[in-house]
Image (cartoon, rainbow, N blue to C red; front, side, top):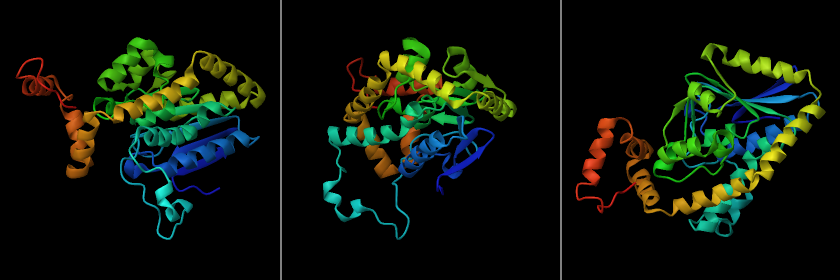
Length: 304
């Protein structure tokens, strides 16, 4: 099977699926998400495969969702192009939720497929990258990896929510109320990843784990993965994914989100990201922002 945005290799009882948009730090386009779903189900059906390794090409695992328009290749057709007025392109709450649930069905393949998926994090794992990797069954990170969900500062929340199930409410709230990054080393300490290793040892550690899984019959791997995931479902994990998409859509209606859209449209993505994250960069910049926005006292409006 040919893929435009992935590299898929199968050998020695494992399928390596590599996100392959390194020029965009593997930002998640709709095409990539659709191809990833197909590659995962193909690996799950392949009797030679015991486990899947999910990783990224280039400098980072994944920089999040691709916020640029998803343009089709020249000459490519789609049934939707013929009747655009009947497909969901609006900004209503229901349209927004529907589109996020469409992407969620692709992501949930990692959770639903029978065979275990090992997440391999290096470089940045941001926003949509966390939506993917924390659905994996075991996650290994480089110690210097940078993990976070900065869109919570002005754009919404994660449409996939496994945070609380991995680290409990205190750390989940810290990550999602501040948008701060933590290192792979810190992620191991709080239980967000199974293990953090030196960047030089990352691939070796993941491959050694896949070696172990390759010695176990897939029926046992499947049964034990599904036992744990069913326990998570009994704790509400699947329902929480649907709620997370709806809560994100609710936050998209915030005036702060409209501010983001305006800046992104008028000034460009780079400037909009600088506006979103710049004031968090240092204590001095945070103080400057507070002095500017709270000069009139606690009732002064704060945007963003």
